[in-house]
Image 1 (cartoon, rainbow, N blue to C red):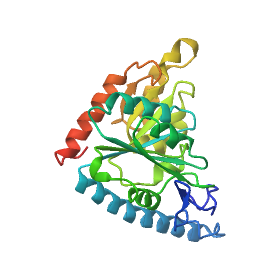
Image 2: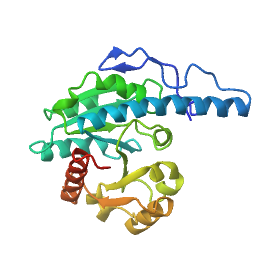
Image 3: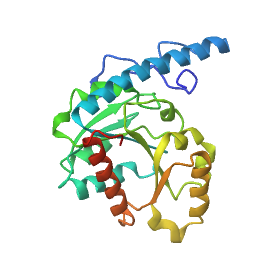
Image 4: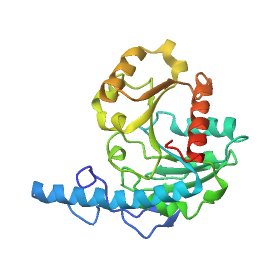
Length: 257
């Protein structure tokens, strides 16, 4: 939780402009008593969930598929987004909200594809929250989009607890990480509907047990879908694109995506 995870009170910016909000829960200092801390955490999540519900209503009104991409830093989220946009933009209009502590490098990479992207810088904050996303939505023409991808701050802990209003979370695990990540960070993989096992082109050069990684993920979340892909070589990418288009069609039909 943000009352204990180390997030700071630093200014939050959207495309370089200061947002008139603080990171959720940060007006509080770390409480001395556990009961007080629990109450603050409940208040923070309650406030966030209320805004997430408003975001979700807004997305539903537009028939917009919204995904929250979560992972450790360096898993390949941004490269995955770039390749997805390049291969799908002829059929689906895709926008991106980028979340990072500093710099606009990822948003610039997305914009170079011709897609719409906005950058949220969280300062010392370790995740996006629903209010930050709501602020970003006002800068995007939602009626001109079919799919909105939210690339969360690289972190396998706090983003699991914060609903942004998305249809679902997509967890990216690269084969350059350990097979035991789902066991070490169960909340994230339990919250995700889909796990993308990325950078599979590197498997011949690594001692990574794919079957074990998948088993660990299903141990914490028996219903999780898993795909093996490589954003670099394109391995498994058609399955990912098909999944996106089916989810978008379901959303457009008013079904649960």
